[in-house]
Length: 143
Image (cartoon, rainbow, N blue to C red; front, side):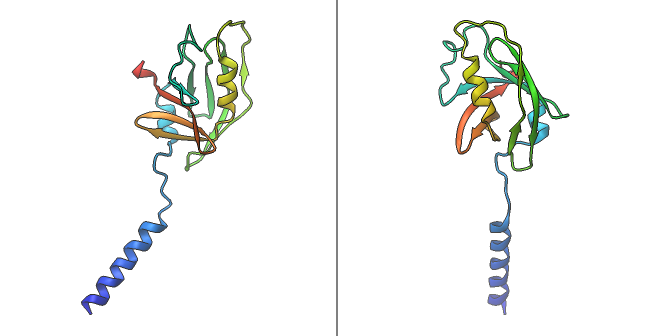
């Protein structure tokens, strides 16, 4: 009888663990809005000084589903949605249009527009396009 009960508990525990819809690393809205974020890597490269000589791009999310930031020269903003699994959808972005020579702002905004998932990894905000990490941000307080 003890063996039967033990087997039942093992099967029950296995079912609970394997049926867990875990979102390990998925970002919560509270975490997303708790800090502004500063770009630390783009498409796997953290050598950003040559692409953004004056100012690193940054992004801020608000609790009322607004997103804004600076692309290294111009201000941008729009709307976003985030689900419980970290799926991110950024709406059409509006941006100022000052001329900024030698800044990869267009590249940054193009990559940002394709981001479809957000995760927190080692306290950094990582935006993915499909399965590829495309933008990594550190909390603004870490500047």
